[in-house]
Image (cartoon, rainbow over all chains, first blue to last red; front, side):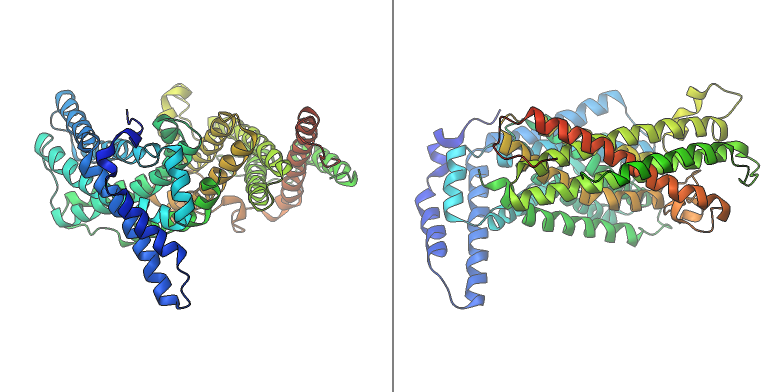
Length: 255
Length: 240
């Protein structure tokens, strides 16, 4: 589905620039900590920009996920026209789950082995995984918003508190993207496809999905407040994923 | 693990659990439990043993990542497998208990399944088992030994870090029939000192130790067997 990108010269035209950026910041040893931090940020930003550029140049992947979103919601619309609130929110989060698996899966699977070796020689694993987490978060935020709009268009819109709902959708999309980014790294290293991501991810994501569902079931009623503890717990689990990725990714990274 | 005294201790404790647990007439009469209350010595101990074995598996995974010594990887896998067995036994004993206490006697047991399966403690246990099944699928799908060990250990640690929050979070979100679930308080029923009659503790605590030791014993046998099988891979395996 995602061919080896080494034959997409166009996507990698900026490579020499990238090499210059990363190489410079890696080789120069700074005595000053603050400069080091800014170097770090620069590395992360450069890797992030590379992913963004690839996404913009090879738009078929982005549109592929978009089509997946549209087609799934359309099929759902054919199957079930006006679901009640409980079903509506349940279906919404299940769709988000599958979208995030599809959107995030390619982030590591698209990197060829030789390119990973190249990254290995110029950036630290922490910076690399942070850049990936950042990019996938952004991608998933866009996808969540789009799928929310489409979902609301096709399958009625029973939500009363739109702002709170958008906030929860963003928070949920972010949580999903973080967990599945790390699992994509595992799947890519195990040379497996996206199916193993689902197997690995579902048991881990169940508590977060339950938190999201119970939090977002309050958006149908103006009188019920969104439970703050659920939102805080989701934030805490997101922080946990980021920390674990930082600790564990270096072990995946070395071959 | 080549000491033998703990194996004898395990046998004695389990014999004590089986005889005292099933025969000793010291259990309180709880209206909807009656004699099924004795299942506490088996059902709850299975979950204790499962969690302890899974924790041991994660500890071995961390040890593997620190040392790159393959023996820890094998230990980690075997602890996970034994933990799964204890989890399934926990389900089995739970099913027996449930069919006497929760299930509606007027309908077939299968009819009340969908209600009972939403029980938070069951979901927590299901997550634990699914995580370790996924771990086995992932680990055994890779052919390269070092890679298999490393990726398996990484997933083991990552998933375990989510397992405990899951067990704390879910009981707060769902209503529960299970002991320890009232008032949205959640928590572990066996660790709630108010719930358990004091005279039952004289059997319950030895039972936990006994079943856990049995799990460790089974694991140590499986580890030794695996060491023998993989002997040709590495020159210097540890003795046991």
